[in-house]
Image (cartoon, rainbow, N blue to C red; front, side):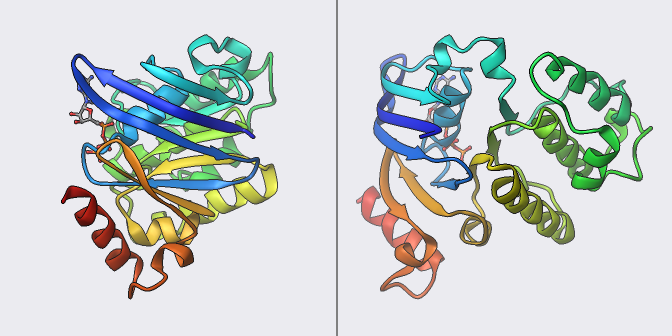
Length: 239
Ligand SMILES: Nc1ncnc2c1ncn2[C@@H]1O[C@H](COP(=O)(O)OP(=O)(O)OP(=O)(O)O)[C@@H](O)[C@H]1O
């Protein structure tokens, strides 16, 4: 397994926000984490990225505990956070070239032109990052996430702010990364349509517990649509 999460618990102060979360993912698998605001999706993903220390449970990413991941391990992980606002004065091509060089001891980064093509930024190579539109900035975030050809890619609400065409192209990119590069992808989203189009498996997290797991078809079974199934699940959990 590329990702293993077993009985994961997380507390912030006295509040437990992840109670007993378990799932796994294999090479080339796309897993979507759905759930209401505050369910614990970002917390889960940040623990897997090694950005947050869990309270209990076993977590392995590429066979390594993220709390003890070294630079070589980190080079195999790609991350797109919910938002980050930095590098404002850099230009698009310059930043991607620079970040790519960090991966060189461990991997061959994507050539910058290929990367710009992949994420749809071929018209902005010389633009200063602080002048990009929200959607263009998000595309750059995705480029930063994949520049080192990661084996595992974590995407926290990657398509927030994308126009329909950018969203469509991003979905194509995710499918290709999984199918052709064998990248394992864990993404959070509030877009049910996105989850059903992209994910081999959907996990529904509510109030820190996984309340459903399966393919979109399995989750829909009996309900009219993924939206109906999702609403029924989270409302039942709330009661
Ligand atoms: N640093 C923190 N300190 C204290 N509580 C936190 C912290 N980060 C998150 N929380 C709380 O933990 C719970 C889970 O938050 P998290 O951001 O993981 O949810 P989420 O599912 O990603 O939500 P959203 O869909 O709104 O992004 C929430 O109740 C949140 O208020």
